Length: 95
Image (cartoon, rainbow, N blue to C red):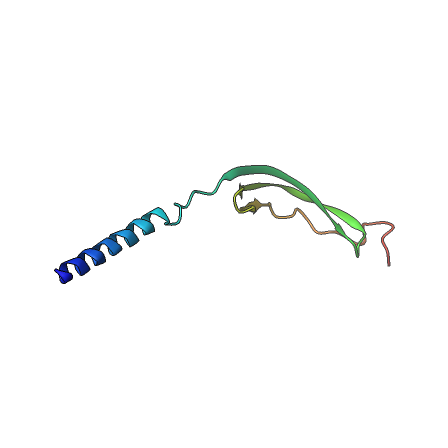
């Protein structure tokens, strides 16, 4: 009879642990909230040594902002530059 009680107690303890594991299991992971981003990019840069501004050809940015993690990922696509700055053609440049 004592062996039967021990087995019953062990089975009850095992079932209790399994039930507790199911109840306190980590919640199911939910998908991140993302917002798609599509922009036309118009930019310029300043070359300090030459004291001149250079226009960057128009490009595009396609990506997504992850609202849950606060990150932005994507691709920036810019065409190759049209030319090179000419120091001699620029009047008033610093020496």
